[in-house]
Image 1 (cartoon, rainbow, N blue to C red):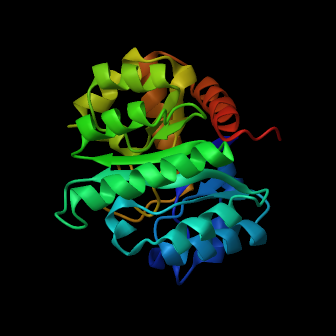
Image 2 (cartoon, rainbow, N blue to C red):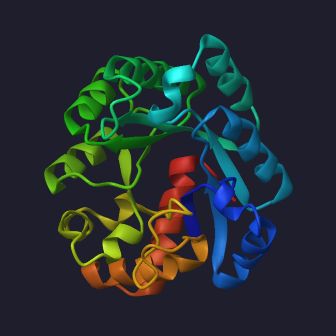
Image 3 (cartoon, rainbow, N blue to C red):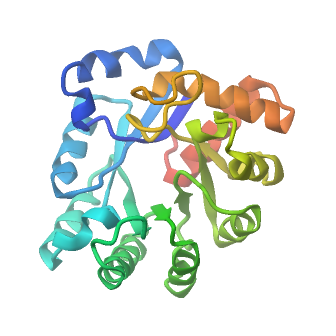
Length: 256
C-alpha cells in the first residue's frame, strides 16, 4: 500500500474534519503515514495522533522557520519523545533562507544541534532545505548527517546535488510538485536517480498535485504522484507503490 512519509495532519487546515480525512485514507490505498513535527506545539500533537491511529507514526523536531524560540529544554523534550516506539525520526529540521528570520546563524546552530541529537539517538532525519543548498550540504557533510539515513524532503535542487545526497545515505522525497508542468528539476531527478532512493510524500495540507493544485492536499491524492513517477521512469504504478513503500520502511526502520 501507499506509504506517505511526510504529512501534517495536526495542521489547522484539518481542524474541522481531521478524523474523517484520516479514517478515509486506508480505503484510498494508503497503508502508512508519518506525521511530521515542525514547531513546539506539534511535538505533542504528533504524539497524540500516533497514539490515536495505529497506522500513523511520527517524527519529532523543529522546523528552521520555528527554531528561533528553541532552547536546551526543547531539545531535551525531543530526546525524551524519541524513546517512544512510534517516533521514527528527527524532523523536520534544516535551513530555510526564503524568509529573513530566524537569522541564518540561529538556523544553522539548531540544525547542527538536532543533527547531533539524531546521531546520539541513532535516528534518521527529515531535512527541510529551501534556498539553502550549499549550506545544507556543507552542514550535513560536517555533521555526518546521513549516517543514520533520512530524506531530503520536498526536493527542489539539481540532479547533481541529488546524486550527492543519495551517496550520503539520503532518500529523495517526491510529492505533488512532480506533477506540475514547470517542475523540470524534480522530473529530471526522478528520471535519473534509482527508484530505490525515492520515497513518496504529500506535505499535506500543502502542495497538492495536479489537478488539485492550490487546494488542500491529503495522502489520498498520492496516486497522482505515483502515476507521474511511473511515467517518468517507465514503470508500472503498482511497482512504484511497492518499491517506495519498501524504501520508506527501510528508511524509517519499520519492519511491519
